[in-house]
Length: 158
Image 1 (cartoon, helix red, strand yellow):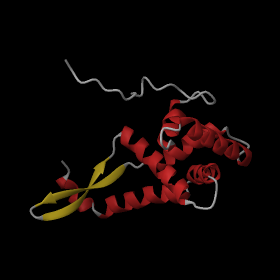
Image 2 (tube, rainbow, N blue to C red; image 1 turned 120 degrees about the horizontal axis):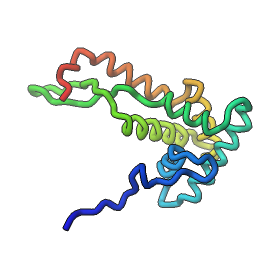
Image 3 (tube, rainbow, N blue to C red; image 1 turned 60 degrees about the vertical axis):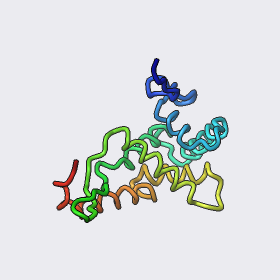
């Protein structure tokens, strides 16, 4: 007959219980390790409690959305082989990939902070990203800088 996908699409994914947000639900799935969703959920909500204590004037889910938006890249570089040479070609990034890259950079920046509980380091990275600082935003700026430096090869974009 046909191949049926068993992954949940964005339409099927339910919003989380506390903030009623699909974005939060996707991020919880992104930080989950070994299928332990309840652990990932608890870790994220603990991080949001820390964010709520440090930021009094804004709800924590708005701070999280702002952090994700500040980490989204507009362009990225991809390798393209032309005539025996590899070029780093700047390419625009679609919305879905922008979101997944932002999630990945926030998650990896939080995991890289050793010696602290994950909820604390995740909260700190979310706060830093919301301010436009931190490792995830630095990664985005580096990607944009690389794309700007290789703008001369933009005509190789496929």
